[in-house]
Amino acid sequence: MARVDMKSLTKRFGDVTAVDAIDLEIADGEFVAILGPSGCGKSTTLFLLSGIEMPNDGVIAFDGKDVTRHEAMERGIGLVFQSYALYPHMTVLENIMFPLEMMRLPKPTRRDRAIEAAGLVQIGDLIERRPHQLSGGQQQRVALARALVKEPRLLLLDEPLSNLDASLRHVMRSEIRRLQRRLALTTVLVTHDQIEATTMADRIVVMNKGRIEQVGTADDLYRRPANSFVAGFIGSPSINLISSVAHAGRVQFGDVSAMLARPSSTPLLLGFRPEHLRFADTGVAGRIVQVEPMGREVLYEVETGNGILGVLQSADLPRLGEGNSVHLAADAHDMLAFDITSGKVLDLQPLAAAISSPRHEPELSGTIPA
Ligand code: ATP
Image (tube, rainbow, N blue to C red; front, top):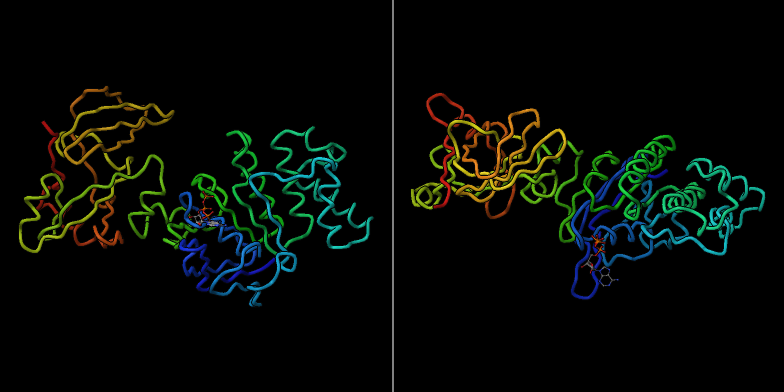
């Protein structure tokens, strides 16, 4: 198992900077997920760690030892891809043993270790089959066993569950997580699926345009996003981001142009999670334009003067219908605020205190367009 350090790691492909001077430390035995939209540089980061790609700049160290220019074979990596990449003419056992053949281990040792790895991923009874005689989930287990059999220092998983159906993905998520804990295997998972990242990883690295936006636990990213990108990317249904204005210690949205005209007013982006908005007697006026039952909760899409806002309510509450006129309220301490230019999170405490003070009515005002 290894501790991993990446320093100023950069990879360019012609004009494209796929990975832009990232710094990241991964503790020995930690499970880290790299999460981000398509093209943000997740897979390239994984390929740099594996030695498949070489960086233009920066350093990668395993347990303090510089491996930046080491070949993939020398790094002691186990890799699992979205496509299982099994050899069709080999049996399951031969597929799992293959990396050990490359390591020139004696045949009986190879066989013993492959059987043990097959047992770890619960395919011990399938070792004589060929890949075409397996389901997708079983093939992915073979790929995982083939990565584990090497007893790697670092396990790298590139979207390993994307080809599986939803229920199998759920099972495999918890199995991989349990196995990773049991083996205390330093693991990096690349995914665009936030559920996968939040359920499997100790920490999540959110990437965007080759850079790291934030590193933290699922809770950190959800409750304390560093910027509006992370706030918008983490959470389903998505956070409501609303243009607003702070003036004299109070926040208003609605007719922000009038507020902005006042001296010393600051434009802000306010964030409200759908579960933090509620229907009330006063507040932002709107009209329900869509009702989406989601099991234990109902998502209402409400058209307001500030755009469509999502409101998540318990399904046990009285159901409202499309076309209903409503008002929306929120508690000040549930609000997030971001700098409108940089997107960086702002300290809202002084504003929140002003909003919730009895001297000021919460100015969550707005009108529905005519
Ligand atoms: P996805 O989720 O779609 O796989 P990703 O976050 O893994 O995306 P990367 O595959 O790392 O993104 O790609 C990052 C950027 O680098 C993209 O703009 C991509 O087009 C570019 N890129 C990646 N590999 C190469 C390559 N071999 N040659 C040229 N450009 C590349």
